[in-house]
Image (cartoon, rainbow, N blue to C red; front, side, top):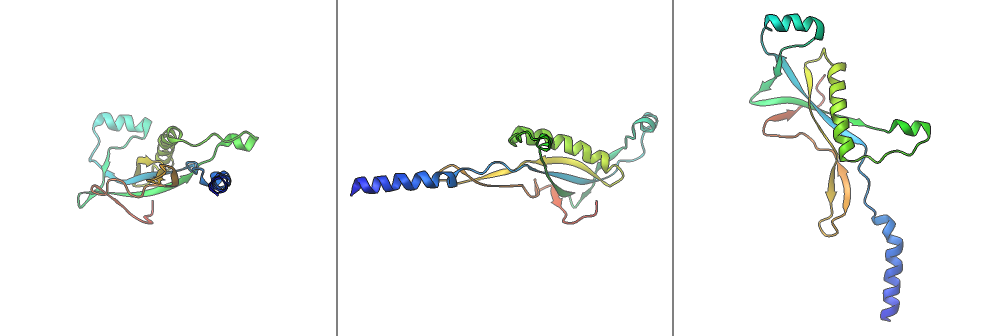
Length: 156
């Protein structure tokens, strides 16, 4: 009886093992863009430089001691897939590097808006405390709630 039960459990685990595999990190990233305002009149040197670089003298807009931000989510893909190559697995290093590039690109594309890139966030794992396996992934909501308010649906 014990051998039969052991064999049955081994067989059950063999078929259940693929279902228990940890899900891969999703290729998504959240960037947080926050409102800025003018930091006063630029100096003469800044004026001359701004003609060539487009630089502005800005500071974070703070209301009730909190920055006003919004979360923007990007779904990423590996362009090599378009040419038949296998996609590279998305990991923390690729996510962090992507966050910097997306943030800089966002600032350039939205230079006329009152928002600027502040930081990015990679997916965070939800871990089963017993098996120590990744159950799911989620993107963080608003970071540092003590100093940041994430507005929903703000017009950027």
